[in-house]
Each structure stands twice: as C-alpha cells, then as structure tokens.
Image 1 (cartoon, protein in one colour):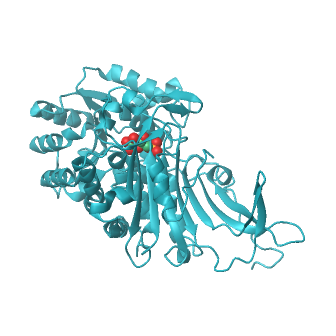
Image 2 (cartoon, rainbow, N blue to C red; image 1 turned 120 degrees about the vertical axis):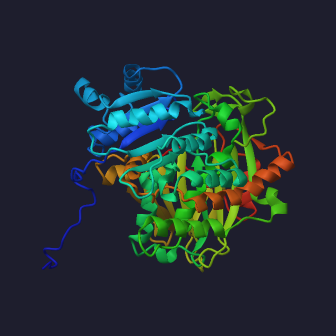
Image 3 (cartoon, rainbow, N blue to C red; image 1 turned 45 degrees about the horizontal axis):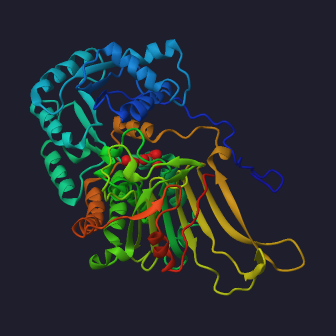
Length: 528
Ligand code: BG6
C-alpha cells in the first residue's frame, strides 16, 4: 500500500516509452491520381512510415493509377525521390527501399472513361494471387473531384465493388473537397450511394488525423476538471484560428481560385475543430456516437440573419506585402489568378452554437493565407472573476494604468509547437497584492519522446482497419455545407469584393471590427 513515504510518483515525461510492435494490416491499395502532388507529398511518405513502423504488411500491393505512361520501375524511382528524406525515418537505406518498393506498381488508365477499368480489375487479381487479402481493397481518390462520380460508377460496372455478403471488401477514400456547395455535395452523396454503402465511403478531413486534434477529445472527456467549465456559465468566448503564411505556391492558384478560404478550410477543418470543442460527451467512444454528437453541433450553428451576412462574416484577399521579411505578391499577381478575381483568401466569422450548453457564447472563426505565420489554435477565454479585487500598475511609455485580472484562457495549440496551455493570475512577489499573468504549459515535445505521426498515416491506417471515427459522415458534410452555402450565395449574388489585407498582416480591418464590436480582440498567436 502506498504511504506518504512511498507515494507513487507519476513521471511527467514518457521516459522513452515504446508502444508494442503492432499487428500489420494489409489490403491492395490503389491510388487514383498517382501523379499528383498529394501522392508524392503525403500519401506515399505516410504509407512508407506506416510500413517502417510495422503497421503495414510487407506484401500489401500499392498501385499508382493515373493517365501518364509510366512503368513500375519509373514509378518506383519517382516515389523514391518523393519519399526519401521526407519521411519521419529520414534517409532510406537501399535495403529498406528494396524491401518496401518491391510491392509498388503502376497502372495506366484514363480514369474518366470506362475502357480501362476491366484491365484494372484484372491487374488487381493478378497482383493479389497468393496474398492473404485477395479482393480486400482500398481505393484512394486523390483525383480531380469531378472524377469521383464516373470513377465509382465504372468501378461498380466492372465488378470491383464487391457484393455485401462475400469475403471481399472495398473501401473508397475521397479527398476533399466533397462538393462545392450544398447542392453539389448532396448530388455527389446521392450518386455514390447508388454504388457504395456508407461504411465503404471514407470522406477525409485530414485535420481529424492530427494527433493534437484527437487530443481535444481526450483532454475534454478523459479529465474531470475542465469539462464542467466549458459552457455558457464560465466561457466568455472562443476563438479558432487556422492561419497560413503560404500563398499560391506549387501552382495551386488554378484550384484555389475556384474555391477560396471559406470552402477550402472553414467549411471543413475549422467547422470540424468547432464540432470537437463544442460537442457533448458521447455515451460511448464509437464512430457513430462521435459523428452524431458533432453533427448536433453543426446543426445548432446559429449564424446571424441571412439578410445581415456582412455583419457576421468578413471575406478578405491579400495584397502585396512582406512574409518573414521577404516581399510577397498580392493575390492578383499570383500565377493562374485572374486579375479581377474576387476569391476570398481569408474569412472571419462570428457564430453561436445555439444549444443549452453554449447559448450566447460567441465563437470567432478565422482562416487565411499569407498571414504572418502558420498556426492553428483554439483559444477558450473564460469570464473574469465577478469582483476586481486585485490590480497592478502597468505602463507603456509615459502612460500608466491600473490593470486588473486578465481572463483565464485555455489554448489548444494544434500546430506547430503543439501544446495545451492555461493562463491564470498570480501574486507578484512583494509586499503588495499585485497581480501578474502566468501560464501553465503542457508541450508535446517536452512530455513525449515519440514523434507525432503525420495525419495521413493515422487516417490511412484507419481505412485499412475499417474505422471511420476520424472521417466525416455524410450528414456532417451536409450540415457543414448547409451552414456555409448561404454565405457563398450572398457573396455571389451581391458581387461582394473581399476586403484587402497586406500579406504578412493578420487580416482585413473588417475582421478586427467584427470582434471589437463584440467587445473583444483577436489573439496574436506567435509561431511558438
Ligand atoms: C488543405 C487546404 O485542406 O489544408 C490547403 O486545401 C491548406 O489550402 C491545408 O493549405 C492546410 O493543412 P495543414 O495540415 O498544413 O494545416
């Protein structure tokens, strides 16, 4: 029994803890759109890392599917160049690469016509001969979203979609964007459901694969001290920021100009973060219960009145400026951007979650390109104490003020410098009761020796395991589009021009106004 002298000390670091060797998962993995950026930058490095960590079977075939002519050998070489040095494992030895790459193949087809699909089926069957997971397949749609509909139809026509009751299975992963607005998302869902069941459809939002995002649930529901405070009685307001300093690099302009910040990041990543921070505890930690709780939040989103959209949503577009001291183009000067484009590269909004827990608490959301730094965080600001008993003199130059307690703020830093911190007031040493703000910090890199996995690693593994917890259910996607579509329509119908902001600044003046009129200020997160 533990006594005062022998009390158990729980280490605050993981002391080099190594998880047990996992049981490897396997299936035939086909990546449609294998010549694209996502395959090289994210999917292949993640598959390599999964394999290197023992999560992916040694023999599981990985087939790149695309239109350009390539051989298996040239595809392997291309993937080596993409993966070597980009992976968590660092430089890959020739032996490791030989072991990994022997199951990489390339299959050339035009995904947009049915002609090549029968040959693809044959290729699957040839490669799967003598493998333990014959007919167990994952198809990753890393293509132009316009191809989602025909591709699924053709897969079904040639019999690649197995029947419900057999041993074989097929899971299809869809990269975002899943639809362009409410109507197109619904049409896409309706079409896919003619050929696939919901449990076969994996709609990716890679933010859900980030370890720090998953930790929001563990922090909230695996501890008892904070959860009772997360409601309208104690919380003053919440700020969610997804900021990027990047602009239209890697030729993204063509795609981005048709999308914009509201569609590209707010509709999915920001609303998913909002769902996780605002949802009720699920009764069990299962995919269905979690989806349902998040869905309730998305359905409770109460924006301002539709006729008043300009009062609660502010679109912005960057102009030339400085990023890290270096000159950066304005949006209109970027490659593949029409000089009169009205696309939003920034959006800020004030919304309420109209339910019992959160009624009356404003949630301020913002995301944008060419902001001063890349940072994603959720900051929950609590109410001030009811009486101002303590204060201190604070001076800026010659001007001094009596300052009271600052509000406690709980900050989930999703990236970079991943951490959770809580700010509170303490007494400054001395003979007077002078108040001083400090923080209590938990930093991942100090507490754990293990590196955080890439979001795509976790998500690919979940697909192999058939776990859809970290993917979006169709009704969640629907609810998110239902919320943002009136804003898109309003901008479109009224030819709204986004407010300019200088590259390297924190966004347009109207976004400041949005929080000031509610009596607040945006936080200024640093790169950490
Ligand atoms: C993608 C968006 O979904 O998320 C990009 O399409 C954005 O425009 C990216 O840059 C941000 O992801 P991360 O993981 O770098 O924060």
